[in-house]
Amino acid sequence: MNPSTDNASTHAFGRSSAAGLLLSAFLVLAGAAIGCGNSSASTQPDGGGGAAIDGNVESDAAVPDGCAVESFDAGAYAKNSDEASIGAPCLPLRESNPSFDGFLSAETGLDPAPSGTATCLIYHFEGLVTCPYGQNAAGQAPACAAPCTTSTGQPVSGKVTPQCSARPASQTVVWSCRCANAQGMTNDGDDYCTCPSDTTCTQVIPSIGAAEDDVSGAYCLAPAVVVAPGTNVTCGAACDPVTQSCR
Image (cartoon, rainbow, N blue to C red):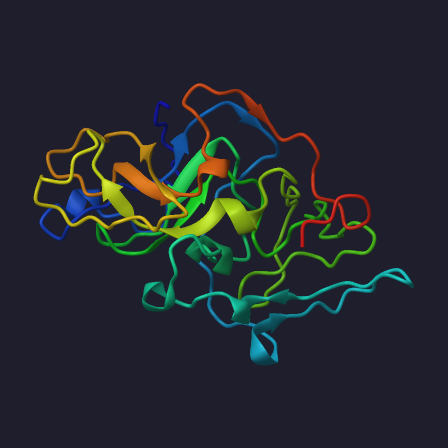
């Protein structure tokens, strides 16, 4: 995979001794050619929130009779790396921003975290974790689905592409940790984790070419979701609340 830079969402990050490598939001890589949807530039959220009691994100939008629309349960996710279990689903930091309209399946990214510690890894995933069925530009969701909201309950603005049914958030947006550098080594002075037995230490992020780099390298992933470099993977069936449930 060859890295590319998304000016709206890509930052390098590293240790405090290398301030130029600090990633304030999200590292994006152009990986395998995987087709689905679009992503637009985002801004920082204004704050506030409309999270419902017990962490359930509710929507006031009307839905057709006979539909059982489930609210997104943000409370079911670990709130920080101290509560994280490697391989468990996570909520990326960017999904607290109501102007962020989703990830692209051709990209790989992660929330900032020290090398070897738990981080939320977004691995060739399409759309928003909080909104599996997406919505149109007017903010209208498909029949039997609720409009998109952030992880704190705010309405998301703009079009959101539905998730790909073959790569749902529960499998591709997960807590992970850096288990080796880009050369597959762990003897360079950085901290690394040991992957649980149900995951494998997989090269995910190519070297960014910096003298001090604690981002690139391998991360723990379930073998079933790994995309080989150069693989042309398409979305196939998108998640649909009636025909292709992704809950």
